Length: 331
View 1 (cartoon, rainbow, N blue to C red):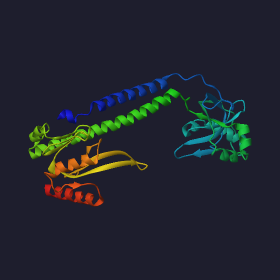
View 2: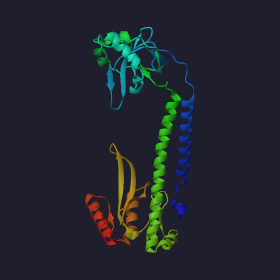
View 3: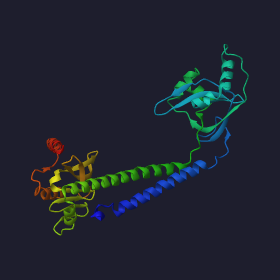
């Protein structure tokens, strides 16, 4: 019986494969992150998007645009030692370290600013990016220029400080790792739920004094066995391999078929049961038909004539009332 409730061979293989893919993805990303970066080039307005480069800043404005929400970035205007001007994206903490560049900018462009000399250039490293089209009007308006005038002077790109050059393999590995982690987590959660149900079932059978009876009936030759659905029905018990549940027929008070749809198309059909202790469990997750529901219900009805069959709002209320009454009697 333990073999019947153990995860299938296919599921065990899937867990191993997903774990290997996840580990390989993580190691690959770590290796890429530790790989020395290529030699940066000096920033110009003609560099292609995604170029790793550096910028020596002597003058830095106050922030021009600050965007928050799903994306967070702040644009500044910066000048290099050759008096070339660029739009740059800086984090607040980096901008805070460039107080001398900010003070010099204020002195040269505002009469009431205290005297300041040109500071030593402050070198920044990053990657070129393309200014978003919805940011262009705001940037051009800040400089009292048209968008064409703005792009003619600053170009269509900006300097994204602190960014690393993209790596196609890193994107592939991250995607593979994310999907493998997600599916591995789902499988592990399902396995954990199944083990928890099995333990609760074992405790329930022990409390009823039916542990040996359940073990003996599992191999009875006249059992109804639905191998592909991993469901066995004996004279007195239900054995659901999908969810790890063993329950006396008397504990199963509601059975119904659930159809999961996506855009109106049925994508999965499962057979569910409501137990008298309030647990909703899956009796079968594959090969669920009306015939399977009928045979399951017929087998349980022999010991539990009050079984609720099928789903409706009223039947759900009846089930909840039975569970409530049962729990009150257990106090």
